[in-house]
Amino acid sequence: MQRIDTFLVEHDLVESREQAKRLILAGAVTVNGNSRIKPGQRIPSDAKVVVQQQQKYVSRGGFKLEKALRAFDINVQNRVALDVGASTGGFTDCLLQHGAKFVYAIDVGYGQLAWKLRTHPQVQPIEKTNIRHLTPALDTEDCVSIAVIDVSFISLRTVLPNNRQLITDNYIDIIALLKPQFEAGKAHVKKGGIVSDKQVHIQTIDNLSTFVTEKLGATVRGLTHSPVHKDIGNIEYLLWLTVDGEHMDSCQLQQTTVEVVETAHESFEE
Image (cartoon, rainbow, N blue to C red; front, side, top):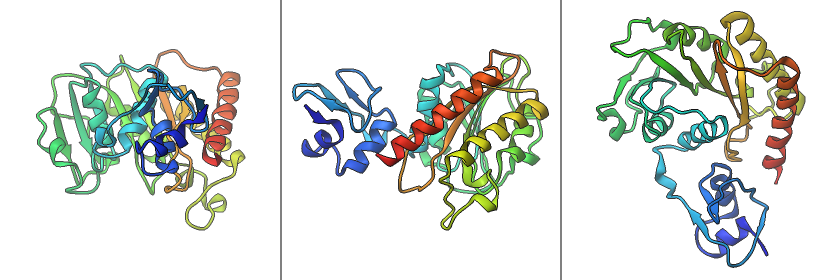
């Protein structure tokens, strides 16, 4: 028996154990067809190990969204989506590869979206645009029914309200990447923009959950941690928000939040 991360290095499937860990946590490694494994898990020498191509998506953001879609069992097939904070297009790429009908890729920047997505017939780049200033009049005959959000240097509280207005009332899914360093407040952010305190993570998630319920009429239906990347330095979380759908009650959400934060920190420290 051998650790899976060590196995990958010794068999020249990855360059380092850190790279192995990133791919494992992103679900890009399977052992005998199973991707639900841990970096420190031991496997038999005759196990069938498969590593997906690292360039599956134009950026590692694609792996983050892929984990959310898998964890929450969300089907994006034939749906029209908003990608808020599209950047190079990792989320957009993931949506298309999972069958999305069309994606509006919105970003305040310009020229960042990968060329293969910029020229894709199912993608409309909307650049130099702040989501807070985007009007509901999107050029589509189909209702937008899902939004995915990955923004930096700004709180989700400032971008979520307009996303709620831009998508149809009858079928709403919002997957938001929560970054504690932009939500917790300056008092909790250490040098280098790091927020490492578990309790601060828990409180940050609780605060955002309360906000979406009270201000947006939405609820948290799912929560998981993002695939861990130590080179980023911060643990991130993926929230699944819905309107008029199933959701976790307050006790269940509190318990889930604690469990997810604990698991995230354990993975980060391995």
